[in-house]
Image (cartoon, rainbow, N blue to C red; front, side, top):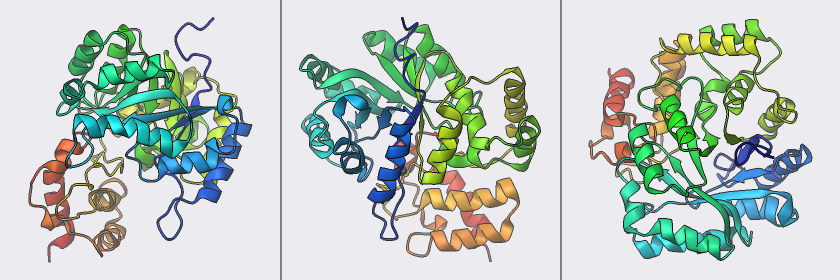
Length: 375
């Protein structure tokens, strides 16, 4: 008998947000099929997409739903009530039916209210979305429902108190953000567990940043286990926590899938020495001044100046984290070739309202403009 909901679920989840792309920018379906096959052959079952992930639900249909028996996998998707400039209760609820049509899945094993934050979580009440998903569960179109969350523990506590029948919560958890006051990973985890909720983990590798961490962190892990990938420490860290259903990894190529499966097919929690290495890595991260962007691109959809914010931040991080001044300048020049420069920001604030990492985007763009555009 499971001690908590989802305990027996294989712990690696396939996040379908960052699927491989062809040169044209379209999702590479053939490579995605290979990744799905590897994932399924390894006995993993949890797939995660969302209405707002461009092309992802259609890719899930082509690579997974049309090729495997429905009972052999579990599929999660999400409803984003605040998506679009003219969102309404009607358009929000329509997302559910659109997702069913796109995926062809017939039903969703896990359905989430998407990206609840301080500035939008009450909208789900206003649009009666909580009642809507419960109605779909009664119809058999949803097996389990919950929400993904990007805010503070007091708001999480409020939501779970108001909605005690929530079955699970999706949280951003990783070792680098465990004590980050902007992400409040540990505190959110503790609130969810206090309410007895199981957890799906997102951003365990912090948008890929923990797969290639700063030199001091790499040295710590190399000494602990020179054969292990840096991503393996990050994913196994959160998978070792109590109450975890699945740990989502947004894999973008076959090599990433193969690496993740090498240590998650037969998952073993971190041992005492590995936990000690994580603690040392957390201390080392305290001195890193990187911009904590995970390249989710939520900020760019409504930018009136079409600024490639994540790419600009990645260029600046080359300088801040690695000291790669020239490489950073080259990356910045490439990032703004067909889009707005950092100095084009008009401080409208839409990016900051959308950012799940609570980054002060306007201030950071000013810093990037000073670093890259000064004569």
